[in-house]
Image (cartoon, rainbow, N blue to C red; front, side, top):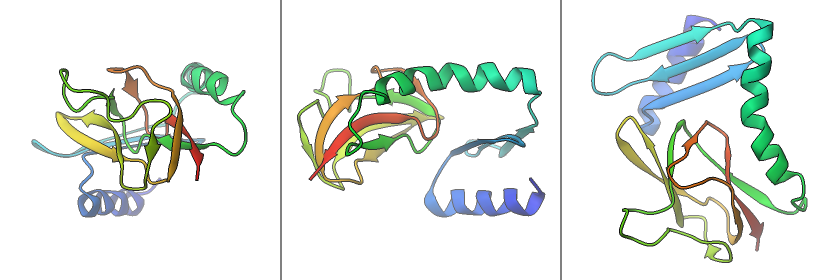
Length: 151
C-alpha cells in the first residue's frame, strides 16, 4: 500500500467523521486512528505463520453462526473496530431484540470507538432474526452483528 492510498483513506475518514479504520488483506494490515491528538498509522505485513491464527480465530464464531442461516438472510456488520453495546445506556432496554422489525434508519446498536459512541443504523428493512454478538464484546470491522430477514 502506498502513501497516496493511505492519504485517500484518511481524507475519506475525515469526510465521513470516522475515528478509526482497519483493513486486512494478503499484503498486510492497516490501522488508522484519529482524534484526541496526532493521527496514528500502523501498517504491518504479517508473516505467513502469524496470519493463520489471527484470521482463523475471529472467523470461527461467525462461520458457525452463519452456516445454518438461510441464504435469504442479510447481515448487519460493524462499520468499525470497537466495543458492541446493545443498549443506549446500562439502565435502558436494548435498541433491538430478535423478532423486532427494523427500517433502514433504525438504530440497532452502538459501537464505541476511542470513547465515541457511534449509533449503528440497520441500513436494511426487515426483522431481526439473531443477535450475533454479546453485549460489551469487542468487534472488528466488517464483523456480522445481526442477521435480518428482509421485507
